Image (cartoon, rainbow, N blue to C red; front, top):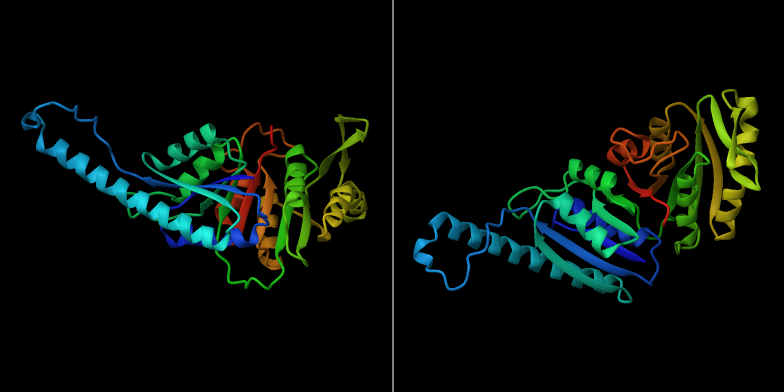
Length: 308
């Protein structure tokens, strides 16, 4: 598994590092730590030019950018050594760049092609500007082609069972979220809640041999919720076969509100959701369910995109 971590030295970034212990990542991990110095880098001063004619402001800007980039490089190196001490079997590298934070992460992800980007919910850069503010994490969520984990700290001790809430709606992306949880390496006793939030109708495959064919069932009334449980029974069984304790939960209302409320009530460590659902949203939209959950949750949120 290839993971790209955005790190800026803030308490939120430190919480994201601590969250790695409860993310079920296993030992076969290739990790790249990326620190971004949010500073302007002027055009290079050509070697051989008479620096007498280089404006003092340009020289100062170069010196400042070089200093900030050196600080970022040092922080990335120290962070890689810290993570290596916790996960000695991981293959860890680090990189520091001077750039716009969100776009630096997005471009690196396009180039390096990680399976997952991990970032703090927000943060304050010590390198001259912002780094992982909420708006930047939302931009990365929107633009990234891979899954993104917005990590938050937790007071739960490592001996407590990991609790995972998966928002499901029978879409391909929510099924990918279930598969992602199944493929991780979780400690014994990990608990999973499969949460379906119903409004009036739900899509199901009318013919299992033709999964692209869908029909809609009425689920507004509680007497029809047994049908909903049957829809998600195969996903629950798949999770049980992966050694996880599973409970199917059904709630009625606004999906984002219900998932957030259940995560708080259930004391979840992380919420897994697909990037899009049965409503046919082609891309993660600001204000969509997954975006709202990642911005407002008290715990970590992993927005899963199916692997191409």
